Each structure stands twice: as structure tokens, then as C-alpha cells.
Amino acid sequence: MTRATLDKQPHEVASMFDDVAANYDLTNDVLSLGQDRRWRKEVAKAVGARPGQKVLDLAAGTGTSSLPFARSGAFVVPCDFSLGMLREGKKRHPWLPLTAGDATRLPFRDDVFDAVTISFGLRNVQDTDAALRELYRVTRPGGRVVICEFSHPTWAPFRTVYEEYLMRALPPVARAVSSSPDAYVYLAESIQSWPDQPTLAGLLKKAGWSKVAWRNLTGGIVALHRGTKA
Image (cartoon, rainbow, N blue to C red):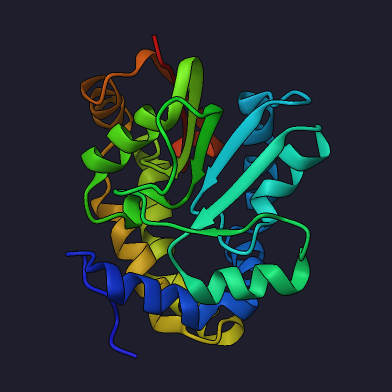
């Protein structure tokens, strides 16, 4: 496999995720030292899905991130552009309505969802602005967006240690546990090049979202951004 470049050509990124689908959830658990489970719990709290609500879980991968919304009684639509991820998800959760879709051209009508969310997927989209506009389009007025994404630690000494881990420790660990370690080198590089918390908040406002705010998790390794459609 040719490692996807930071130009984020959609077919290359999709192929990369196809290759890591089988062990993706396990690898993330190992590389994040178990923190990914805590982060996803915080996403579920922020979305606050209620029975009967419609939730779009974009970049849902195998559907693991969609399970808390389904358990709440909401109707959740897991959507991803990696067919390999969706196939793996269908094996594990055949009852979920897994849907293939491109974040920049979502296959849904306007004003459909009460909440839209994307975790650890926005930085892999070729056009961030287009994705944020699409999420806005498919959300009903008064609905909400929750974005969980890797970000930048706010304390400089911790940021230095974290960046060393990303570029030095993560690749050998990925080689030990992942079926496609080159994919995780790309992911480490994409984290470093991703906008910081205030910049992403600005992009949300530019796409039309109001009441935009964010909360740092694990010292800013991850940030939880929120917004509302007026």
C-alpha cells in the first residue's frame, strides 16, 4: 500500500482504512493507552441522544462509535466512505443501518438529523469546509454538532512529549499491533498538521454553526467541539 499523503486524496485514504479495518478498534485502544474509550464516552454525553431522535455518526468506521446512540433509543445512521470498514461493521453489528457516504457530499436530505457527530475523522476529509457545511445542511434547525478530533496539547512541556510519542513511539507500536502500520504513520503526521482548537472553532462558525465552543480532553490531545444550527 502506498501511504496516503497529507493531500488526502479520497481514494487513497479510503483504501488505507480498508486495509486496517479488521484490527482498527483494537489498535486504537492500544495506541491511545485505553483513552479512546473515555473520549467516546464524552462524545456520547455531549451528543445527548434521546429516544426517537435521529443521529448521524459520520466516519463511523465499523460502527463501534454508534452503539451508545443506539442504546439511548435514538435512530443512529453510521456513515463512512471506507467500504472495508463498513463490511467489517456489518459482520459485527448486522442490525445497524451502515451507510456508505462521502463527508463532502452526504447522501441525505436537508434538515434531517437532530444531532450530527464525527469522531477522529474530520482531519481525514479532503475538504474540511465542505464537510462542515454538509453537516450543517443535514441538521435540522435547533440541532447540534459534536466533533471529537485530535488536537494540540495546551501545556508546552506536555506537547513536546506528546509529539515525540507520535513520531517516534507510535510507528513501532503500530508495527506490532496493526495490519498496516504505514497508515498510522500517516495518521500521526495528519494530527501534527491539523488546526488547533480556536482555528477549528472558526471553521465551524464560517460554515454557519452558532454557539460554538470546545472542551479539551487529556490535556488537549483531543478536543470536543460543539455547535448549534440556528
